[in-house]
Every structure is written in C-alpha cells, then in structure tokens.
Amino acid sequence: MSAHDSEPIRRSIEVEYWVIDGDGRLVEPESLVEASAGTEREFVEPLLEIKTTPCESTAALRRELYRRIESVLDRAEEVGKGLVPLATPVNAGEIAELPSERTRVQNRVVGEDFEYVRRCAGTHVHVEQQPGLAVDQLNAFVALDPALALVNSSPYFRGGRLAAGARSKLYRWMAYDDVPHQGRLWSYIDDAEEWTRRIERRYEAFETAAMEAGVNRHLVASNFDPESAVWTPVQFREAFSTVEWRSPDTALPSDVVRLADRLAALVAHLDDVEVRIEGEEGRITDEAVVLPEFDAVIEYVNEAIRDGLSSGRVRSYLDRMGFDVEAYDPMAHELDGAAPVSRDRAREIRLDHAARLEADVRRAKAAADD
Image 1 (cartoon, rainbow, N blue to C red):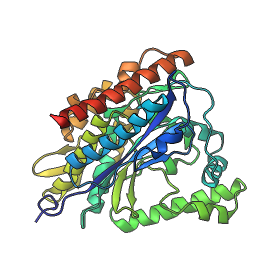
Image 2 (spheres, rainbow, N blue to C red; image 1 turned 120 degrees about the vertical axis):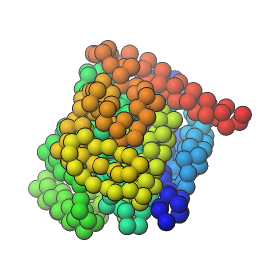
Image 3 (cartoon, helix red, strand yellow; image 1 turned 45 degrees about the horizontal axis):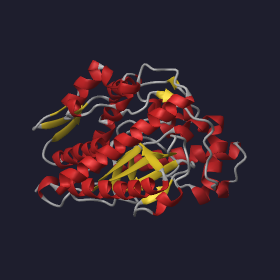
Image 4 (cartoon, rainbow, N blue to C red; image 1 turned 180 degrees about the horizontal axis):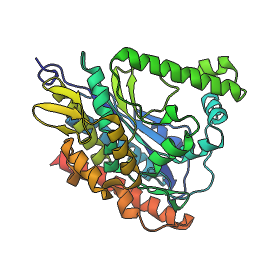
C-alpha cells in the first residue's frame, strides 16, 4: 500500500508578516499577538508569525490558515494596523530586535551581516516525514528549491534592487556568506545518518565561531542545538517529524497553500515510483521522480533568486517538476523596475500589499460561505 493510499500526509505552514500602522510605517504587533492561536512575535519588533497546526488535507490547511489570518486582520482593523505579505519592507529605517540571548549570540557570530536577516520575512512549509521515504523526501525538496521563484515577493533591500528574490539573496549570499554552510542549500543525502553527521559538524563549526567571537560555550548550548543552529533551506525537523522547506518568501495565503499542496502531493507520489538522481533537467512523471544532479539544481536556484520567473529555464524546470507555473504571479515582478524606492513610496507599497492580503482572505471567506 502506498503512502497516498494509507494515512493522510500532514502538512503545516508558518508565515511571517510585517506589521504596519495606517500610514504604512512599521510598528510592533502589540495586541495582534493575542488575536488568534498560533500567533507569535518574531525576533524583530515589526514582524508577526502565524502558524497552523499539522493538517491532514489541503482543505483543512487552507481553512485553518485563513481563519487565523482573518482573526488577526479583524483585530488589526480595530487598532488601525495591517499585515504586509512582502519578503522585505522595501525601504525602511533601522529595525530593532527583541531582546534575547539567542539573537545576541547570532549577532556575535554573524557580525554586522546579521543586519540583512532583520529585513526578511518568509514562509516555512512542513510536510510529515513518511516512514521509509524520508531520505527521498528531503532530496526531492532539495531539487524543488528553485520553486522559491513562484512566490518571490520583493526585489528590494533598503530601496535598491537586489534580485528578484531579495530575501533569498540576503540570507544565502550576504548574511551567512562567512558561514556558508549555515545558510545555503545542502546537497542530497544517501541516508539519515549522513544528515545527522552534517548537522553535528555544522553545530561544532557554529560553536567554534561563537567562541572565537567571545561567546561562552554554555551560552551557545543553552540557546542552540544542532537542529536549530543551521538555517539551510531544507531540513529534517525531528521535533515535528517533518521535512521543512524554508525558502519561500512571505506571500499571499492562496499561493502559500498552493505550494504546500504541491509538496504534499509529491510526497504521496514518492512511494509509487522510482526515485533517482541523474542528468541536468529533472522531471516528475507517473513512472518516476528524476532529480537533477545537485550542481544543476544550484544553477536553477541561482537563476530563481536572480531572475525569478523571468528565467525561461526556471519556468521550464518547474513545469517539468509538476508545478502549475501559470497559477502564480509573483509580486516581485510587478514591483521590479522602480528602484530606487524612497521611504515614502515604500510606505505606499506596504499599504497596497496589506490591502491585497486582506482582499485575498476576504475572497476565500466569501467562497467558503457560498
């Protein structure tokens, strides 16, 4: 019996939004945190995270995510605030962190480049690990990493154009450039033990870097473990028994749910077909899941970050890997071409995209009520 024919494959979403006031200025969430279950502060002041529980179907995931966002939006309307589904704030002044030992350690290890992380908002998709298939699942998610192009939502950093996927560039090529194994995509694995060895080595490297930066070993150990000390975009998460994909930007909930649905469908398919790694093109058919060699995946990823869906190679690759590319309309491409963006204009852009988020949620509610 295949995974698809047995137990449902649970999936969950974590999505971060910038919080703004009625003038588009970044502000703290304050009472928005109490508006719904699964709502938490992030490590910087104007970010709010909304999480779902593990859901057994796309319909259940969609319903829970939209209800939680709607509850927060209702409270936001009462207090004159909004939520912005953009990967960066486009252009803003200093963004303050919430005080925490964990963040202080990261600042010491990463140094001034940690500034880049403070200006990023993203989405994490968890899909339940399937017994006997977890290695294939993780490898498949690695191969699907170029799908980040489907939801690139901001090309800007401090008002200047950085890339179609500015957040991905900030994380992978700038913030963690001096500790590249922490933030970049890792290659395929042969077995779960290889993954364990990798994260243990990366934790040791992180611990060494921390001590070289003057951080006490005990302080590192009390705030990090091997699993939480790395950012790499695709990870086993033993605490949740999931494979987590951390690459997507924050985006409209409709697109985020569509992405999660595709990943869950792929996992259901893995038990029915041969999975192999070969060549440069990649494809998913009724008979096989063919993952490109890792060097080819990296080429697709780099194009997805630099050019997004403007790249014909990326579009063709994602189509071969089973994505309905035409169903997505990344906001980064609409925004592109206007650099430099002043702070006044950035506030207008944030207000516009807050309105789009609200419209997306209200549309879903209206459809569910029909």
